[in-house]
Length: 155
Image (cartoon, rainbow, N blue to C red; front, top):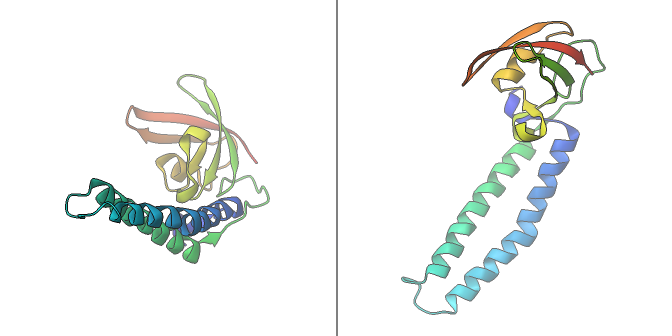
C-alpha cells in the first residue's frame, strides 16, 4: 500500500467534500467567467478570457487529482494502541537538544499539514516514527541538521 493513498476516514471525507465543491460550484463559476469574457469580443487579446481558461485548466487538473486519490484511497483507521506508531497515531515527542515538547498526528501524504501538527508518514519524521514505541529515541535529518527526539507517548 502506497503512503500517498493512505487516508484517515476524516481525511477521505474532506477530500470528497472538496471534490464535490469543485465539480459543482467552482466549475459553474469558471464557466460563467469564460462566458462573460467571451462576450467582450476578440479572444486573441482578451486577458480576462485567457485568465479564465487558465483557471479552468487548474481546476480540471485538481479535480482529476482528487478523483484519482478518492478512487485509489486506502482508508486506514488508527490501530488500537499496541504501543507502536502507525497512521493515525497521536504522538508526544521531546526534542532532546532543546527540551521542547510537541504533539503530532501521523497522517497520509494528502492530509499532511505540518503547521497544524499533521505529519505525513512519508516525511522524514513520519518514516522515523513508524513502528517505533514509547521511550524510543529517533533521529530525523532536517535542513538544520540531525534532530533527536524521544517518544513520550503514543495514543
